[in-house]
Length: 205
Image 1: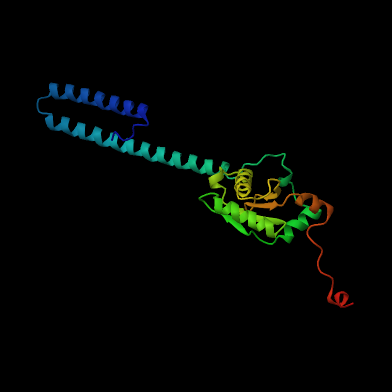
Image 2 (image 1 turned 90 degrees about the horizontal axis):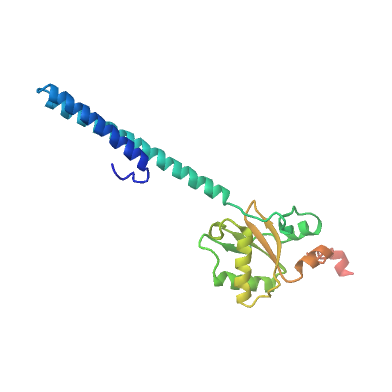
């Protein structure tokens, strides 16, 4: 039962109880010569009781570890700085820009970001003003901001403009919207997204 080495006080208490009962059993056996069988039974009972108690300690210790791990996962799910404008609720032109970019064109899985992801992001931003990226935050310690920094660095290494911008972070679905240099100014000025094409009748005129 000595695999519970992480709980030394419990082991000391268990061993002390065992030695005390054994000492009492020795006194009984010395006073009554016909009690060797009783002495063996007492030893066996003490051992079984100790093993049962030790098993309950193992179970409680394991349950506590699992609960602590669950709490860590929950508290590390999202880490964001409160002063980042990318976290503010969307409205106006920024809401229009978010809705215009329909779905994530790039996904980062549980293994984290690679050079290939950085190159893909660079190519996507060459084709689009803004790009949504879906992120598994596990490799980034639960931080979407860290994910943005890592992806931006990889994209710049692949030849992207270092002025790449963080447009918005949506924590509810772990999505980041990246933008080309100057994208935020275009969005706030109403130049992005582009206006819808005119009705067909107007085009014919």
